Image (cartoon, rainbow, N blue to C red):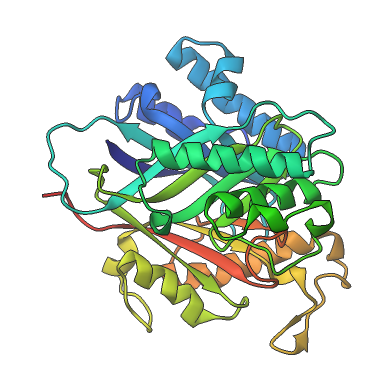
Length: 346
């Protein structure tokens, strides 16, 4: 299979004109779209509006109902932007490619969903097990044979009561699937309490528009004929440039200095989970994300900082930034995954 990512701008939460143009000009087919992740502006209502806009367009192109679009194509709307963050969406494209012989591991992805979660299951260990199963299924679909080759897991789950627990159980479910955490050590008391339990490859967002946990697993596989490759790394804090660069080194760009325009042009997308708002300081100096006038928007501030730091390296404001400290890396860290265009398969 051949896997591609296509990044499109959004002029407003319901703007799917770039996708419509790609479809109308037959640059891509609707059938090849396996998932969509968007960085949308606005609140939960805007996320729902964006989701509906994609449903309307794709139901027409695929000749299926809007509900079928919602059920079969994970649409992860990451709401609220700050700072220099540019609203945009990333299309996950998969198509058959039988003409190339692959001798190297290249970028691949798989998608899966849990069943519809009961209200009383959201944010409980039951969700841990359901998400773990979905991650395993998505990894299998991606043709990723080794857990080491998984570089990024994106999860969008129902908000439920409180939201934070839903994100916590999703992150731990992914960590169990990736063997980062032993399932036996997880109980209800662990959730958002035992911060020694985490995944360094998983980013989770929650939204009222979801009824099941939707999963995209990204990694590298010999079964892929893509000209993309993905790497990942961990920033120990929001200022850890060496940690950020480790993600790009893992993807094949090994520079401790700034990137040239040619090198920046090879970067297809960067997925970041920002955790600066999890703790009250950076390198021993306090910050005011939880105490200043924007305290109610601390996650947005954390995303804006991550977007600026990583964006200054790649020369791009259209990177996917989510925020979450619920077992998504060590407290205060940023998780970074970079997708790079590396050339054709032999």
